[in-house]
Image (cartoon, rainbow over all chains, first blue to last red; front, side, top):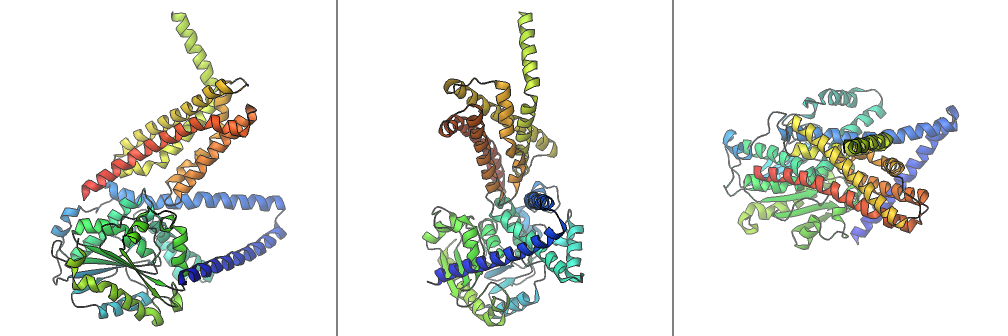
Length: 357
Length: 177
């Protein structure tokens, strides 16, 4: 019933959005008609269309270059899985459960936005002693450097960040923010792509493992890893889970909240999957439409197979949206989301041997 | 004997000059398709020189695949169509019909790439069917039927070539774990 309501809400949001766009587009056309002839206008629209057709795939292809140059060994720093735990010095305390937080597409740098940081601090306070929260992972870069230090595109990102923070025009600031987030959306697209996903997910799994090793994780020590992903972070969590399981030789579970994910990833060996969804979340509902792997029309997709095997737990939070004042990081929904995450973590902390590896 | 051979070479040279635009376009199509698969070569951790050689070889193989596709169409047309088939005009026409594949490089784009690929393949087939319908005065159904075997052959060739590259890449990835 609620699912149907979600879909109706999504359809309504899409229709309203389309209507607003058409009105805006009509006004822009009217304004342009005053200064341009019909033929010039037609040419302009064609040029914009062709530019978009070229720009969108080109930005996707450019985004792939770093991942594959890293895999090729043309960029320094791709670690060997067997050396990961040998070279990194442990910081000391051992835990039974390592909770790795993977942020949504709003993440720009290692530090999370203030609302997310407040949420994570609260989550950390509620975690049991034997669980450790690993935060500050840059989910959408595979290199061990920040986006603003990326070898090929540092100049671009630095200018964009400067525009986003300092430009006097609000529209420009918004456009810059959208462009930064578009980069992260492309990474989600790469992760869910059947051709490129395996290599990018493997590289990200190596990066996560390196971080786990730094905070004291050791394979074969009876520890578990739980990937907590928000929004696009859920897709990244599902992408890396199987690689992480093999590299760390430990059971890996996934907890997503407001998750947008493809359902293409290898999930059969994942110990458990919990999805926490908001009843008013149109973005997560859109994910079910945008990704064919989640559709019941493809019963053999990895996601549908995991659903059939009963490996997916769904928890719904009434009234929660994707972000903003009713989002999971808002004061209203922060605690319910944390409670749901803790409930999903419970078997993982208490009895790792029950779910098996 | 030598004269016959020289005559053969001369006629082949003349034919090649006439189909030059068509063959050139077929090579561009092959090159664009080959470039769309460059990340599979990177996934195999080939060196820069190996990648360049493979790109060139793949482009040639794919051009030959489309040439064979055209040949299959020509054989079927000469068997079932009433209009005579002129190879030079036909290859030039087919090459023009395959023009959408010049943008096949966009298939390398993540996530949307496969959809772009599907659209390009459908457009190419529609173009060839339209060409047969217009040039040979064939009904739409028959044009579709006659052009499909060659088209399926080209699809199979491209699929086999690209799939092999990715499989080797994934095997390499699996060996790392």
